[in-house]
Image: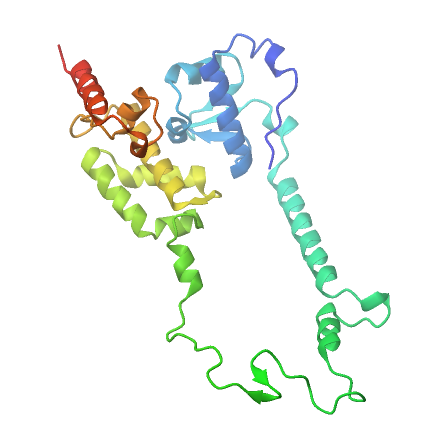
Length: 288
């Protein structure tokens, strides 16, 4: 689904004087409304998700790009229906694409051989493997037979057979949906860390907003954890929720590595310099 932006947006009198923050809010909320098919309506409780200030919201209202619906506590895009497709139109396009995909798959797997006999491709492939009764009285031996007789213990199979899907599910490179991540042990561990770091943060409320924003995303478990931790930290900062204790820089923490222009702790070759840099960062942040 697309959120349509006019190519004259940058020079429009309503937008030319907008701040970058207000412009970003308009764009982010617009893509969200298009994705969620809200008909251009943005609930007020969703505004913090777009990482903006109250001033940015007021700018959009003052410019006439947004209107506030006090009865529903929502912000409404001006003239949304004149430029953006409605939900029925989007649903129709999605159904059309789905049907086209099904027809394509049907043609792919049931294509007549040479356009004559009308047999499915799968049958044609099976026929190709059949032996000619005039030339051979017996079928050819397969990979597990010797002269038509089964081979004893040709390839022992481990018992129980490993479940490949189960192995892939826990792989760090395995991509998963939001629902899969929600049921993972990795999320449980990340939640525990967030509760320790920000005991006053409402994790359930944070998760509800996070799931609305990322419901269609598919990522690796590592990416999911980074996204979730970053979301919680940003939400805590916007809500003025302090961490339980200040971060103490170490030779291997990301701030020290960044100051030393290194990618990971494996790149540290001078431990003394790394420790010194960590101490400098800690002293710099001590209250005077």
